[in-house]
Image (tube, rainbow, N blue to C red; front, side, top):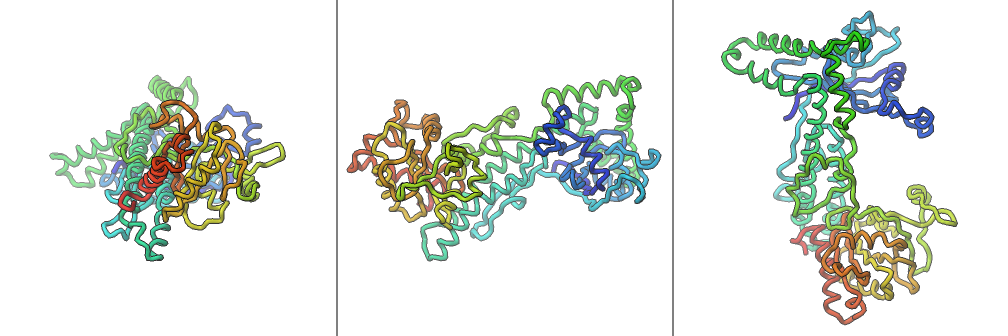
Length: 528
């Protein structure tokens, strides 16, 4: 438990919605014409309020339709829901919005003739927590946790829903393979193994995101401290009121003491309510200076975390990874490394068996927006390659992709790709071999070929400096296995000399080893 709060869901009328949108912008210096051209209003999502009548956060869910939530700190047992009646909360909302509907009496309820109105839709307490389940799968492998059932974070950074979606993305293909395996009577896939791998993948990521969310919550308190409000002070006061000899007093007496002391603590915020800078006190000017320094230095709550949102990886060797807080907003670096998402690289889809490009739907073309001299080219992104190829090949079941990636220096690409495909066919898993060539093949290949003209994937793979690439030559074939969820399962390298020697056991063993390593990383070592 981190903080108890009162959650107030309310909806404004059209006039108030327009007023709030007009007064709320994340970048007031943006040219209006640019905003209009992009169809954006740049409305801020979070509004932290500090005044003598309200300390809370307004969360804008949908400004155009007036959907808002107000979160107010709540301190039971010295506060109860009686302290947050609809009338009192309505006054707090007006105080937070800075609008006095009737002669500065912010506690009154405005009538239907007033221009600005809102309806309170719900009012309930809740507890902000940072929790991750000890186990994601029960011992009999019949119950699996995902989303909010597996973890709860402070709502600072949007990691609750994102982590839940990642859970589902990791789990869905596992359940599909497992259920189809059981339906067919096969013993190829072990439930304990494949579901246990889900837990080993997702639990460390949830723990990392929980820690990041707590750090984000701590960031939101910087402005409060700049206003001389400390989140620890109410907790210290509660501890004092619960300790002897004060705890011998009746609870209602201690509640009154708590309320009065909180009011006293918020009184200095009245100095911020002066209309002009000239009439503000030295105390108010000092607070404003503190707040401005935090905002100008980028010390407020960031909302984009590329390294965690896109760059997260399933690496069991780094389950205890605890990054420096300064790295929370680090940029995403694409990597062809086990556990990471296969990077976004645009490639051409070519059906080598028919010597033609694979036909794309209008939706594919619209989503990629990749132009060529003759219009739209038949291209896809390697990000989430398994899902995209399933659609192209009309395959229903989840597929593992084996990508032999060839450099410009290797001549006999098609025959080598055929050999790799024949080895992959030895395994009973649904594995699709999709060679990645630097140009279209001259001879036919039974299946789809991806053309990476700029060899970006090959370059990214070499950049990782994996074993076997130290000579910096381009006479190497990268064997990249990709899981159904788009994460890299294994990366191996084969020298051209082995590839051209069809009788080389070393060559065949390396291919089999790459597939075995990939399957082990995907569905667990117990299955392989």
